Amino acid sequence: DAKTTQPPSMDCAEGRAANLPCNHSTISGNEYVYWYRQIHSQGPQYIIHGLKNNETNEMASLIITEDRKSSTLILPHATLRDTAVYYCIVRVPQDTGTASKLTFGTGTRLQVTL
Amino acid sequence: DTGVSQNPRHKITKRGQNVTFRCDPISEHNRLYWYRQTLGQGPEFLTYFQNEAQLEKSRLLSDRFSAERPKGSFSTLEIQRTEQGDSAMYLCASSPKVVFNEQFFGPGTRLTVL
View 1 (cartoon, each protein chain N blue to C red):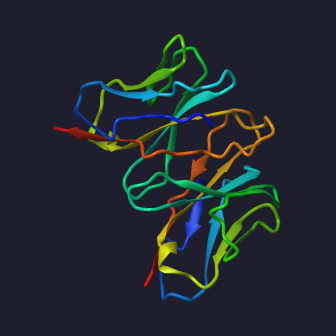
View 2: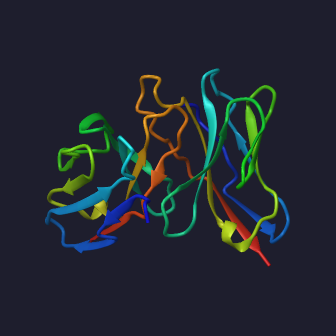
């Protein structure tokens, strides 16, 4: 799986958009970008994934650059409950002959403040 | 609650003792994963089951570690002759056999080896 680079920490005011960047310059053509988050003392939680088109769900939006070498996770209106470590993971989807384990880095610790 | 459950949530043991953790995945999920997470790090993959078959093991899974999923439902992870370096959060995740589907994580078992 391609390596990802994320800033170690970010702050965001409650109610504002949180924009979390991720670099994955060695991503290959069949690899997807996945985002998970881990709230303190809980297991990781899936947020969103994408290949090359921008994606949006009820939790967040994912913007992937045209060259696919970087992406941004956007939480449109951050709340205190969004305080967590956010992991950007690049992987092939499962059912392609691999176990499709998740390879986590150290992620970005997002602190949402009042 | 129909999520992934893990028991116990916390385990304190003395060095040299054996410990066993249990994971109950979401009922219709045929894929089950074990991860280990130490303080300040992202989770690291340990092993993966598809139904009852253990299909992949990480190099992190030394011969003191053994995992089973005897009937393709719940899974157990046993650590023999525990060492202080085994202190970590042990996370279980499950996913259905469908392309792109995310892994659902349990709350983890925190192991402390004294």
